[in-house]
Length: 296
Ligand code: PRT
Ligand code: ZN
Image 1 (cartoon, rainbow, N blue to C red):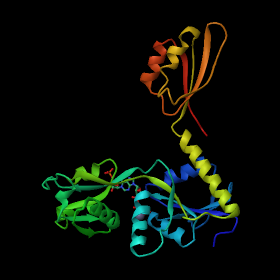
Image 2: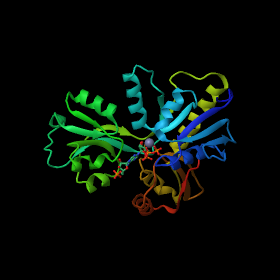
Image 3: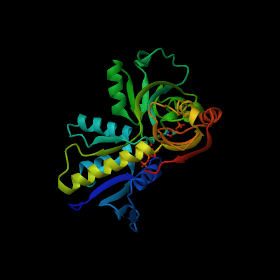
Image 4: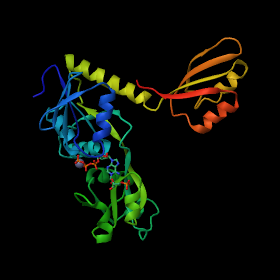
C-alpha cells in the first residue's frame, strides 16, 4: 500500500515515454533512489515515489489504488477508459495535464487501392487495430459500419497479409506507413503523453503534494521552450529592435536600461529565437546578442 503521507507515480519502464518522463520529473525537482529490482524508486527530494512499469498497466494500477498518478499516452488512457465503460466499470483515471511529448496520432490508413472519399468509403471494410474501442467510437461517430479486426501488434502488415483492408494505428513521422505502402486517410485521436490521476480529490497531505507536483510540472512546461534574449542597441533604435522580438505580443520585456545613447534589453521569448530573427535585430542596430535557455 502507499504510505498515507506520500504519493506514488507510475511511468513507463522502457520505451518511447520512459526517458522524457524521467527528464520531466527531474526538471520538476524530483530525484529518486532506485531499488535493486529497478522498478520502485524512492523519492528523495519530494514525498513522491516512482514505479516503473509497462505503459498499458498504468491506468489499471491507479484504479487498483497501487499508484496515485501516472504518465501515459492519451491513446492508452482513452482506450482503457472506453473499455472500462463498456464493461460497466468506472473509468480507471482521468487526464490532469497534457505534457507535450510523445506526440502522435491514431490514424486510419490503407493501401492506395482503397479509393477513399471520406469515412463512408470504409463501410463494410475490415480494419485492423490494437485500439478496438477507440476505433469503434470513431466509426460510430462517422456512422460507418465496418469490421474491427483486433490484433495485438504488427498492425501495419495486415493489409499486405490480406487479413484486413485498412488499419487504425499510431503514426508519428509516417515512415512506417510509407514503408508498408499505406496512405494516411483520417485521424481518430490526437495523442501525447499526459499526467493521469484519480477522478476524485485526494485528501490532506496527499492533496497538497499533488497540487505542488502539478504546479511544478506546469512551470517546467511553460518555460521549456522559453529563451532569455539579451542585447544592446542604440537608444534611438530600441523600439525598432523591440518590434522584431519573436511573437512580440507574447514576449515579455524584462528591462530596457542604459545610459546615454546605448541601452541593454532583456526579454523572455516564449519560443526559440531563430537566426533570421536575430539577423533582423542586428540590421536594426542591435549588437552583443545572447540567447539563453530558461531553467525554471
Ligand atoms: O513496453 P511497453 O508496453 O511499455 O511499451 P509499448 O511498446 O506499448 O509502447 P511504446 O514505447 O512503443 O510507445 C509508448 C507511447 O508512445 C504510445 O502509447 C504513444 O502514446 C506514444 N507514441 C508516440 C508512439 C509513437 N509516437 C509511435 N510512432 N507509439 C508508437 N509509435 C509507433 C507507430 O505506430 C509506428 O509503428 O512507432 C512506429 C514508428 O512511427 P512512425 O510514424 O514514425 O513511422
Ligand atoms: Zn505498451
